[in-house]
Image (tube, rainbow, N blue to C red; front, side):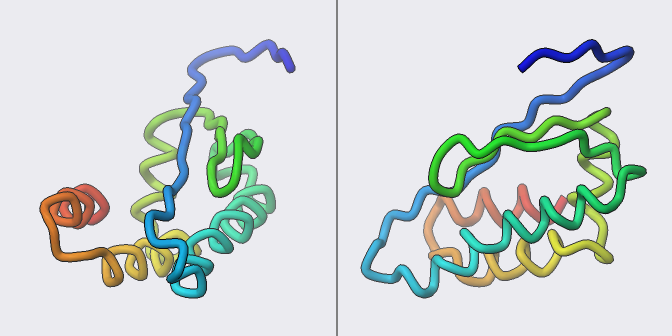
Length: 107
């Protein structure tokens, strides 16, 4: 796929790795959140979201007009991202990596 874009373009690769497959029902909410967020973004062209392609189970390549618009969506409490983010933080395990995720996700 090729496109001619005037101005900035942000390519954002996002996904999750499920380490505990025996807890699939707890992890299912994370996997199911991404398609809902993408559908929300496709309905709001002013968000700066240009599109997404699946790269594998739970991994997507997203295209954004600018980094500021990507961050604005990530921080918006009116979007589907906020409850998904809070759920991820709440269910992360109390180890060193989860401290990073909590501090990183609450930007």
